[in-house]
Image (cartoon, rainbow, N blue to C red; front, side, top):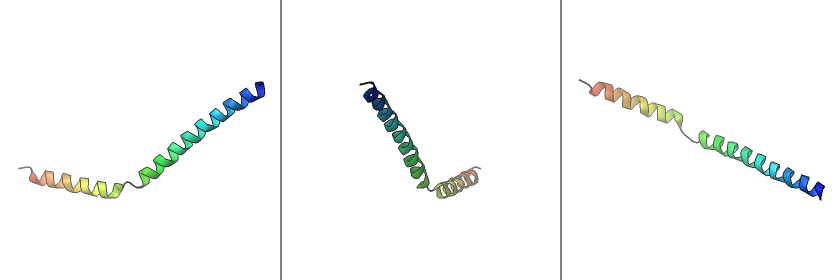
Length: 55
């Protein structure tokens, strides 16, 4: 019985670790798809237009 209990917590720990690793992998993949270069270029153009519009 004691050996089964030890394995139970081992399984729970393994599930938690696998979940955390999976979240970090998916989060990293999500950030790769964001086109930061396009965002920064658009932001620079908007700031330039705002400064040109000021009297």
